[in-house]
Image (cartoon, rainbow, N blue to C red; front, side, top):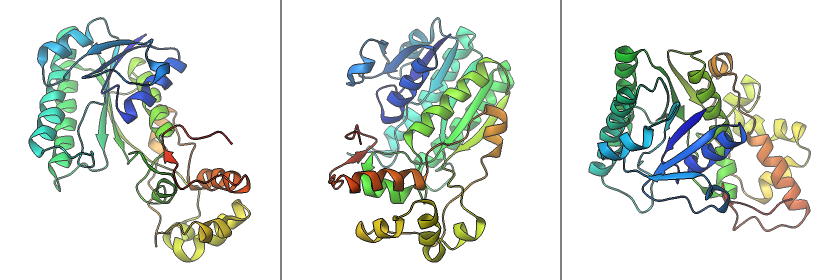
Length: 290
């Protein structure tokens, strides 16, 4: 099966393309520039600015499914204007949906966001994007999965670990959830479906609700030496861990997250024991094997 990925050169796009290839799909990458990663250079690439209807009509030709990731968000560095965010995220999504309608594509995965809402132009762009998905579904009967991703912006290693307890999610989980959604829409197991893509820490409720006090001891019980690591690396702990019910994603997509704060602590412990300096490491960049 052939899958188009818009925004393929981005942080999430590269991970999704790799995961799709590993799952056996034929991938066409679409973006304004090709990804620089060596392992993706052999994949088909088409230059595409989703703000251009002609670009996206050409990109979707011959595809069985489309993963629409192309978007700007407020955390981009250097920052982009609200006008650009709106044009790419709203006009671009409309052009993708319209091109899919014209090409008869009935399987779509849309990258929404937990920033969905009215607090920013970016959040509003995701509200409109989900409404466009609903409209296209009602007009054509297409199978569409809308994934509200939590944050997976590249960050320093230690900051990434701390963020997992808040609104962070591992990029590998994002990619695996997206592949599961592609399979679900291709198999028409969902009509119009929305779910959250976040981390599951497997913590008892009392630990989640009072993590600053009870979290270190619980982590120690799961990863011996955790308290030492938390203190040594001065990892800031939240009062309460952000946790969502992800059972619907498991039920409908067959997906559940595999990486969490304990995964991070185990990785940190292994690096610490080997004397590896983690201060300059960045996630999700390639980091030295342990």
